Image: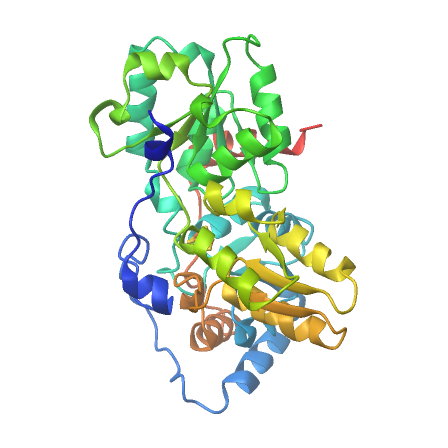
Length: 396
Ligand code: SF4
């Protein structure tokens, strides 16, 4: 596969890119709320959420992902990225209900890592993740068959990003692989290559091609030609047996609709508009954007970098807009100028499904003893997904 082909990404609906709040048919499955949602214009929503949470007391623990809107985040007991939140939930065994203000795969991970008696709840079941939905269990099983027929499956170790379904995590566990986050992807890939003969080992990286490519090239010193892209919508992934044999990184053709929108033009443009600006982007961005940026790192890295930044410094951030806005407000008092990397707004539409009416409905239902929107991973899937997660936790 040529470099140009390997950098190809699937188009994202224009409305989603521009507004971030429109329908994302790949991941919002049209699941209706099974109860009576309060009206968004109800002036008592904040008070109702507070009262229901107070009534539940220690029985409930509310997790808020960094990309959630402020109106929801104000009710979070902890905030963080998906993995930190799952671990925070596991550290609160006294909480009977874990309300996960995030998306579906995050709630699944929390269910896997928490006790059997803890119930994980997602306020809106339509809050999926377009990236996680780009790799289904059937597609990945078919890919493994292709690798087997090409005679390379024995050399391949799967590494799956945390942003994947429980099914994909279980596939990874079954085939001797590990999970990674955007913070530890380099260590996870290093570990994976150590599991095979140094000259023959390969990684199947799921489902975000950009994180896989950026980590392989930036951190492990591979070339773009070491990477091929497996397209689940083409016969044999669109790859020949020879291409699979020659590759070191087999990247699944998935991407994040939010981070995939940043371009080199956005970087050049902000540098023209704001002289001296530092460009800091998430590794889910395209490789050419990461190569053009000054700094690259996970959401936790971004927050720490801004905390450590000197007064008077200027930053353009390439990640989800709710987080960037919150950081801009937080650091304005310290004279740090923080702007969004792109000119147009860009929320994660599925994250934004979790709004105050859904949170109020969830908390009030739980307070009345009615368990709603529970996310529960079946025991067989949980067993192997946990194995893959435990390998990640054991990474050096
Ligand atoms: S920001 Fe991207 S990876 Fe994260 S939940 Fe939204 S679509 Fe998925």
